[in-house]
Length: 198
Image (cartoon, rainbow, N blue to C red):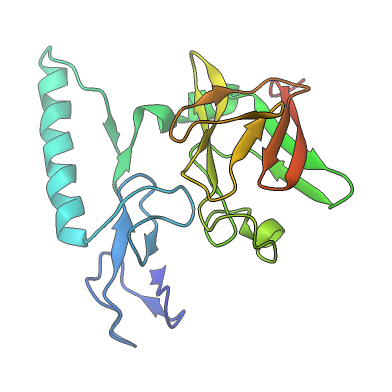
């Protein structure tokens, strides 16, 4: 069962519409969560209707079958949907360093999630910024790559994202390390990156 994003009633998985309120349902192509709108509020992925998801899943399964016959594939499939290269497998999640953005004065402590949006309206951290009109609805995004580590990307925000007082260019990932200062509009946070288990 899934929860309708409009009326919050339980409905059957893979539904096209909520049978309680009639809301048309779309699903995130990256994390598979149900929602509404064009972008996932959890990871920022594109939303698709269930038929588009199934078509993509069938395509990925064909590619997976091809890879088992000696070909290659750059993505994996789950029973629900899709895992991008950056989200592949539990082993990567377990070895991913823990990222924290912290501002003691404002009592903000963001624990990094791969692909998570930072914004006033969307993403898992929106409750920290929902009353700050300088922060865009979708302001920035956190991304982890096994080769380059954690980075932050400005998502064409109105009031900009800074790393150590340097303005970030939109859609250009900038690597994060412990001791860095990230500024989201007018909110500065100190970066800590530590290996899991340390």
